Length: 108
Image 1: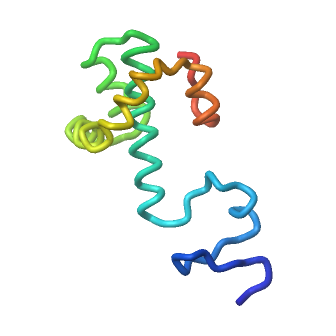
Image 2: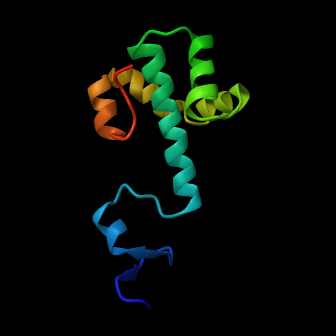
């Protein structure tokens, strides 16, 4: 094993950088889930915090933020509906979303 790397329980190599930053995703599945949750958070932000119309939000997500078709976005939102419901229940603010996803603009 190379110096500076550890084995995780799944057998994935973990570098010193990822040990210090647990929010970094290691596997393809983890990256996919993080992307899906981010898409739900952005949908919530645009519809609930910024109060934009559904069709406008779908256009923003599709054409300006994630570069995927609107049908793909709907499939993702259906898949993470539990997370989206949780955001609604907690009435997340832009500040809370900024803390969770600091590299994105939550100011509008």
